[in-house]
Length: 286
Image (cartoon, rainbow, N blue to C red; front, side):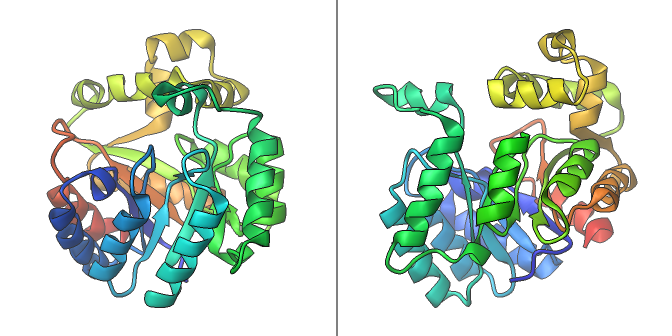
């Protein structure tokens, strides 16, 4: 399972038209992206994984991340085994606890203690028949306790909405043996005004969530940075500009210790697959 280089993190690969998702995945594979990452906020996530695996020949397909409250360990282990057997072990299971406002929005409250819930889920994957191998799973982790759990019971970490400084901290925390696979949001644009027009509200929607807010506060950002989506926090979280500017940010993650960077492209029309942007970035990232 090749988890080097650069991959694509794409919500539309999961929740967009699945015929176009398959066609886009085949092109991304040919362009040289090493992994395709998809989110999970409910629904048949393993069907989407199967769709992408069937459309590709080399790329890893990864959940970024599977919401552990929405899938039982037994269901997850069985799906992982079937998909891995059918597609040359190219399925990487990314797991996370998500956020209480998301998990509890669709029914009775069930979001519990994140660390304990994650540890129990990993233990259940170990006990399943067949188990999910440690080498085939990673964990969404931002803070020190979850990072330590990831280093102990998974192949590595997939931090979302982070900076190269955070990547450096993660590498120092988990050591050399674990994989560090951060997500990096990017906008191809002509300048700061266009970048903020496309991405400011997107950033705001995330920094209001406690997990991300606490992570950014630990990095030295202020509550005012988060509430106003200051230029300081926006520029730290979103790489914007031309292809070379985005390539520099990706290189900063690699220099800080990342094994692989999952690039998420934002555009003014977030309902359309950013296929031209993926092509442009492949020329400098792949």
